[in-house]
Every structure is written in C-alpha cells, then in structure tokens.
Image (cartoon, rainbow, N blue to C red; front, top):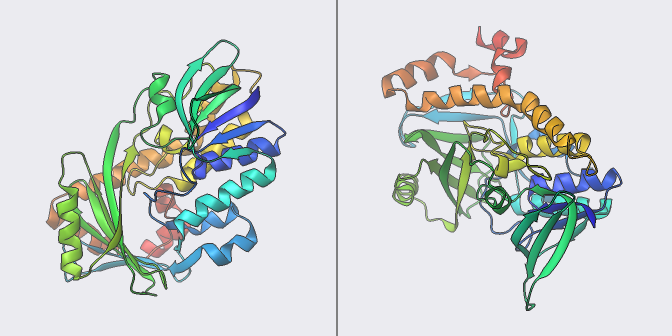
Amino acid sequence: MYDFAVVGVGPAGARFARRAAEAGYDVLALEKGEVGTPLACSGHVSTDIWEYVPDEARDHLFQNRIYGADFHVGGPNSKAYPFYKQTEVSNVIDRVELDRTLADCAREAGADVRERHTVTAIEEFDDRVQLTVSVAGESGTVVFDAKMVAGCDGPTSRVRRTLDLPEPAETLHGVLAFDPDPDHGDFVDVHLTVPRFFAWRIPRGDAGVEYGLAAPPGAEVNEMFDALTDTYDVETEHFCSGAIPIGPPKRTTTRRAFLVGDAAAQTKPFTGGGILYGMTAADIAAETIDPDDPETLSDYESAWRDELSTEIRLGHLVRRCYSFPEWLQRVGLRSLSGEIGVHMDKPSSFFSREHLKKLF
C-alpha cells in the first residue's frame, strides 16, 4: 500500500512526487510512455523555473534568454508593438529535458517512478484507491493500491474522467513545430491573428526557432499554422499537437483523489502555459494533504484556489483583449507598449508599483 499513487510524470506530477517523498511518504509515480515525450508544450518559461531544478541542471536545460515581446495585429511584416525589460523577462529551455530532470529529482527523493505504465482503470474505496495498470512489453495487468491518487495526467485526464470529476471550462487546440536554423534573438513575436487566442515565434538559440498557435475547437489550426510559417517563409519539423485546458473545474477532489496541473486546468488563460501554476499547486498539495486523513483534501482545494484564483481571473480578462476589434487592439498596444515591470506568470503584477512606475 503506497501513501500516494501519482498518475502522470510531467512537471506537476514529478514535483508532487518529489515533495511528497521528501516529506517521508511512500510514493508511486506512473508515466504511460517515456517521461518528456511526446512533446506538446512550449519551452518558453519565466525565470522562476530555476527554483524548481538543481543548480547544475541549468547548463543542459537553458537555450536562450528573452527580454521582451513584439506584439502584432497582423503578420511578421506588420507594425510591432514592443514590451520589454532591461533584465531578463523569461528563458527558453529544453522542454523534454525539463520533464526528465524533474522526474530524476523525484527518484532521488525516494519516489518509485515507473515509465511505460499505463493506468487502465481506477476504483475508489473508502480506505484506498486501486489502480489497474498495463505495462509495455508485458502481458496482463498489475494492480497497485494507494491511500490516495494524484491525477497529474494532463488535459484529457483519465483520473478526472474515471472518477467523474467535472471538466475544464474550455479546451483549446495547440500546435507547434520547429525551424532548426539557430536564432539568438532576445524577443519573441506574438501575433493576434488567431480567433480568441494568438500565434507565436520563439527564438531558441542554437536549438532553432519555435512556431506555434492555439485556438478554440472548430478552428482550422493546421491551416492557420501553415499560413503562419508561410508568412515567415520557413520549413518546420517535429510538428506537435495537444490540448490546452482553460478554466479550472468547480471541483478537483473526491474522497481519495485530487487533480494537479493541466488535469485541474491550473493554467494561464492568456497563454495556456501551466508549468509554474501546476508546480505551485503540487507544492500546496504536498504541504496540505495527509493520505491518512481524507478531510485534508478540502484544505488543498481551498489553498490552491486562494493562491492561483486571482491570477487566473485576471488572466481571463487579459485574454478578452485578443478578441477586441483590430483598431482597439492597436490603440491599446500603442498606449501600453514600452518598458514594463510585469511578471509573465502574474497578471496582478500589472498593478505593481514597479510596472505602474514604468507605465506612467
């Protein structure tokens, strides 16, 4: 009997497994494939990422530093509205290696991390949760028991759906691919040319350039992506596609299960990114949940919402601007562009003394 079974070893799952193991709990963490693959997420992150990995990991994770973004209401030849800092705003990292590094941290803390283990069934009892698992290359299934299960298995979470937890408010369709030609530029490009979201271009140093976009269901994302790369006149490779959950469900816990990360739609509504929010929630889960006391799950539910709800609510307001008429977008970008004092993960920092000083 494990204290916790973690389903999904992405950033949120690996972080929770590590923190729970460090707290002395017996942790089993299951990943259906190889950790880090397939890639379905951008590697553009805030510099806060370095607080979650060992210092020595920076050398093999870091790809490029970013000082700002050029916003466009049209294609690459349209007028750019720059937003920037004198210091680093963000970094570009090797996204696959980030997952592997975080999983290694969980292993070193004592978590039992197993790859190629696919959870096929979950049954919740009064005193435990039972997981049926198929193992790649082996016949039959194995069964694991745990006092609690952490659903960290992404936007289409099997844990969430099997245990009848509500779905996120919305799911976007995101796509990205890469141009291998090196680019050490220090600005990303953001194009407000996609319905209710945006497209992007991210220079990744020697690793090349990332192109991507996301849009609501029904939008022709592949066609829009081809149009984006055509306007940049580039050929891309390693095409990736995935779901982006927006808007946390009203409930993320049952009697012996809880959701963390993309499974709980703990993401930024205005970018779709969820690495920092998911790992923040993972830390809160490790601090608040006692596997021997199911009542503590309500503490987790309250605590993560207290920590993230303001940023998520303000993020929804930012996203509404993507649907403004083009003339209004231009007015807003022109009036707000320039040096900024905001944090890319925290919309509330728009009202910080540092940013208001820059703005006025």
